[in-house]
Image (cartoon, rainbow, N blue to C red; front, top):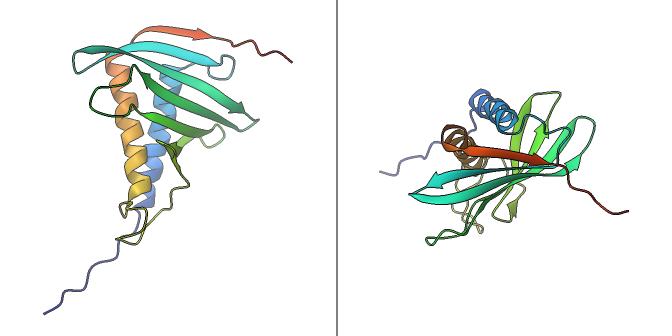
Amino acid sequence: MKRKRKRYSIDLPAHMAECDANYLRIMKLFPSLREKDISLFGVMIAGEAAEVSIEVLERNPYTTSIQLTQLPEAPWGANPTIRVRIYHDARSAEVVEYQRARHFKAVYAYPNDSMRQRDEKVQVNRLLGEFLSYCLTHGVAVHERVLVTQQ
């Protein structure tokens, strides 16, 4: 007897709650996000010192795009590089790129050519939340600065 597989559908209220919580986490880590261009702080990851940077890539009246990066590179694999779009009017933040993968759909058929999970969008936003929470709990020595760009 063949079982019919239940189709996955995104839990939109839970997903939006995660994105809203990520906005609050980012603003706690980088309170002067609207004025400064970069925030650097240290964290201990697996007993090793690492640096996390939050860099503003683009500012618009209602949105800001940022990139979170962890350095130095971990011996077990590539370090997280996460691009996030922040929606200030909605007080929400959503991952738009993770490790050069972009444009996440709400739901993927499985299997698929990209080998993405059915709930890939939910997973990358949850990962962002876990990473930000870790930084809030274990981060030290906040340093923010304005980058001078030549025109």
